[in-house]
Length: 365
Image 1 (cartoon, rainbow, N blue to C red):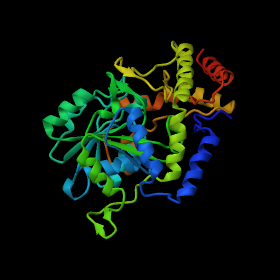
Image 2: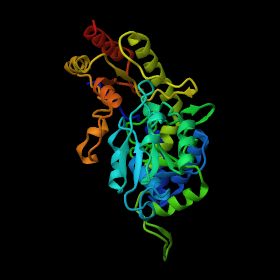
Image 3: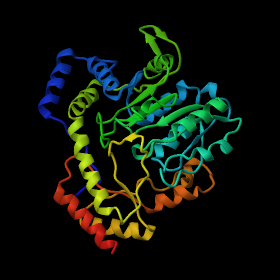
Image 4: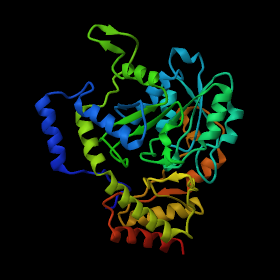
């Protein structure tokens, strides 16, 4: 079986050393030594400030919404946020779950990111924020989105879960927006088993978020506001530190696999238009086929050979009933029906990739 992805497992010997330290200190959670170390090292590696580790990527979004006044009492009676239909469900469901109605606008047909030209017409008195996604690590039009947000006094929270290590015009892509969120789920390029992070633009937002992820507690007998339990623990931090130690070899292996797919399938499928100003991380390999029928035939042929692909992202989120009634987003809907993400992970062998490519080509004759 060749899965669409595999978790990266770092050195067991190194992990054991971190675990020994946890046992020695008898400290499992509540901002322990390893959480502090991972926070510092990630800020240095990513080139950012005001990074807060949290329990997962969905919590990262929800804490950011609450801190920035998109949800909660300060948001008003019927808060809305403009977002993309071409994303994982958590981008929109995190809004809906927190009492904010997602308002979908369509994506750019080349970049697959939120199209700024579609945003302004969707802004109304209830709009509190724009929640774009850097899809597959590709940069949104951050300057245009910032201009719109400033014009209409809106917050910008980037779902940046695919952008670990991505540089845009020489700086971390995570520096854009009032906040940017990361997922450290087991299947991500960098992971802590489960986990996530928020990068805030302002220090004061970081300080408030630190309270919110620990029930609003600020001292042994002090609770300043409502909060939740969204902390990352020491065991997760230990895994993250080990994965971070080996991140360069992981990135290099994925880049080689990505380039081989691109070279072999260049005239067979449609690829995402990746910004020329981007230092890409090769976290995913999405391919768009000519028709949905062709994509499904390829997926079936691969499945017959015990090879897994994923329709990532499908369905287009405006069609998900639990998110409410929304108009059809033609571009997102069209791409979501024709897209497959191919297997890409550090352990994928050249022979396995050759097999995948040959099966795809045989279906596209």
